[in-house]
Length: 173
Image (cartoon, rainbow, N blue to C red; front, side):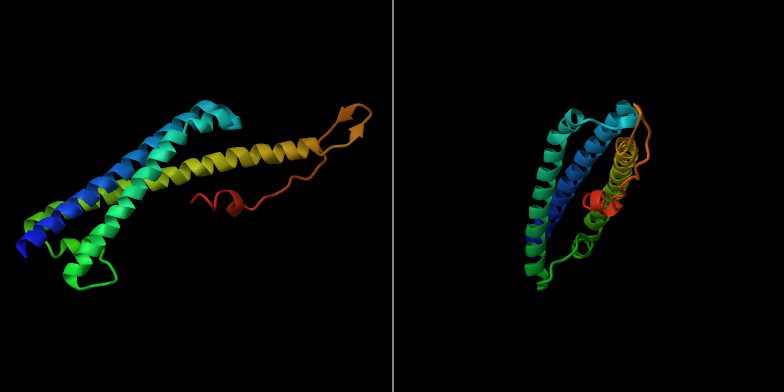
């Protein structure tokens, strides 16, 4: 029984390390996106700049996949021990561990959760900046390019086309 608790503690610790790796990858992506947006000016990033983010996105996806698989293993192990088939959250798993280990792991979990929340907020903020910079220029160009010829003079008389925000940003948030 004590050996099972130790194994459960090791699995929780491994899961928290993997989740910390996800947060690190998300932070790296956010920092790179922020630098890209700061250096791209009012027209937003070009496709070549966005391709540079591909390795960071791939790293984030791989770490998230590893974390998800590890969490499933942890929940299966905790579920067989606690006879709960629905799976258990890390918080409920921590309550079954010895008090000193539970407190230490809970503080780590809370710290990782706070970092993840901040990273998600920054990702959403970056996506909003990308959306609004591209949305403004798309509308501007549609207004400029939908115009009539007036004896060699062009004027913007076209109506901008409005694409609902959920079509662009809703898929990413």
